[in-house]
Image (cartoon, rainbow, N blue to C red; front, side, top):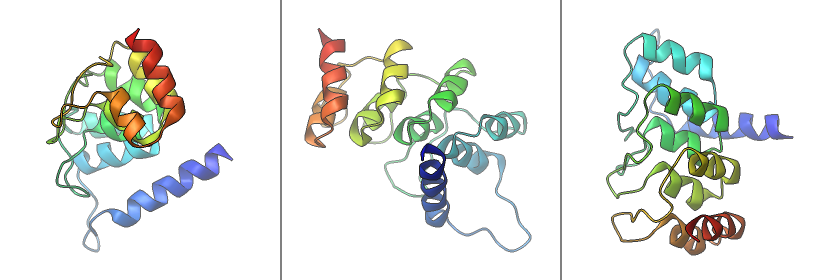
Length: 155
């Protein structure tokens, strides 16, 4: 079941990607972001070896952007999140609207990623650009399980 869900998420993400010209492969940066979405740590390692920046902002799908860690958090890719953190991804890096990876995990109800980020030291009180904490973000998106976890972290 989980494998099918991951495949469908990767398929959806790949459909949203800008097309690559025939005969052309995506560069290392795009491969890093896509591998974070898919949870493919081998592909992430390869992209980093080929020069991808671990903290660059992906604006291909959204003008607010997401970093590789934000993508991994959104898609609940815990091994990918741990890999990125171990390779220097900044835990509190923000997108253009001030969302951290923890905000994205909370927004999407990615509970396992949320727990991993909290364990790594993510700040559950960090406000985004609108002044909302990850807890307030989870509540606004009606992500009740994520909200309960964040409530406990804030106490």
